[in-house]
Amino acid sequence: VRPGAVVIDVGTNRVDDATRKRGWRLAGDVDFAGVSEVAAAITPVPGGVGPMTIAMLLVNTLRAAGVA
Image 1 (cartoon, rainbow, N blue to C red):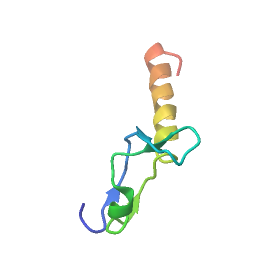
Image 2 (cartoon, one colour; image 1 turned 180 degrees about the horizontal axis):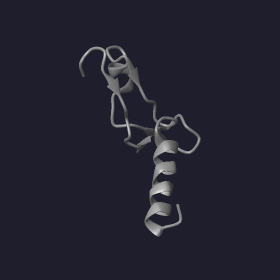
Image 3 (cartoon, rainbow, N blue to C red; image 1 turned 120 degrees about the vertical axis):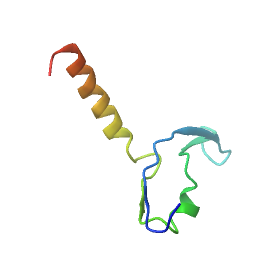
Image 4 (cartoon, helix red, strand yellow; image 1 turned 90 degrees about the vertical axis):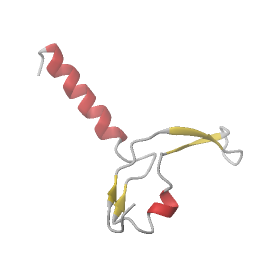
């Protein structure tokens, strides 16, 4: 990752984590700790672009159905 880059992490992976009550946690595809040291900005997982992705999928579904 180039210094100053903006990184948008859209990956969602279930990672085993014995310290969590459910035994796992969500993580992205990007090494957040490492990349955040050189990137200008990085989206977190969870809590990043997921809600926008879902909203745009719904918009496109409505457009395809001819409703919007």
